[in-house]
Figure 1 (cartoon, rainbow, N blue to C red):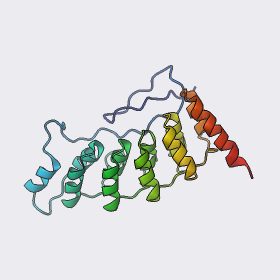
Figure 2 (figure 1 turned 60 degrees about the vertical axis):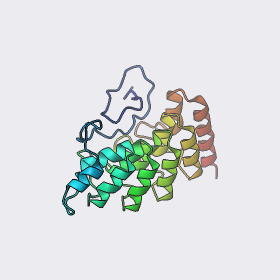
Figure 3 (figure 1 turned 180 degrees about the vertical axis):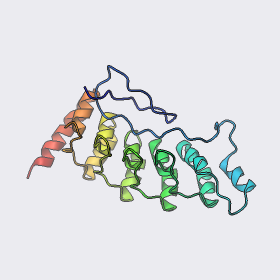
Figure 4 (figure 1 turned 30 degrees about the horizontal axis):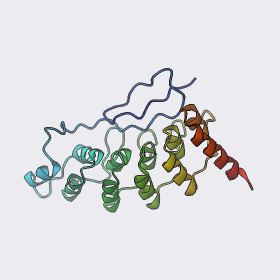
Length: 220
């Protein structure tokens, strides 16, 4: 087999794939930020007050706040002039970090600040792909409502948001994506579909739903 699927990991880093797991897409994982330990870090709102008006909070602090869902700190960082489009070494944005953990209010604030909904990281993955790995239907809905490309595929294995959701057994997200026009016939570079990923991860009912959706999608 070409790869072993990783469980949905913590955002602290990318876990090694574990042998014996059924095959499917590994989650798009934000790399660890360089921000301080949250237990001892100075809150962004305090960082802002301690800085000159034209001195922006570091992007790493914005990313950390977005990842943890600290809305007021995100707002403070943006108000200080921190670039909403700032990226880390993996080309990941604050919107990707917030989407990964389903912080819908933070996602909304970032979008209102001009965050691009379809920016891609170095793996070609979008905020919608990050959100689709978790049970974050409101976040997924918000991204789609703001124009996220529902059938985008990543730059490596050609995994779509639907594949990520299927592999993680996110029934509600799968159903919503299908309602919004997600293509269940898409195949990755190894000819696996969303239904394949659901089946391989033991989500039998979801696999059957996706197979039915694929058959209906192919009907003239």
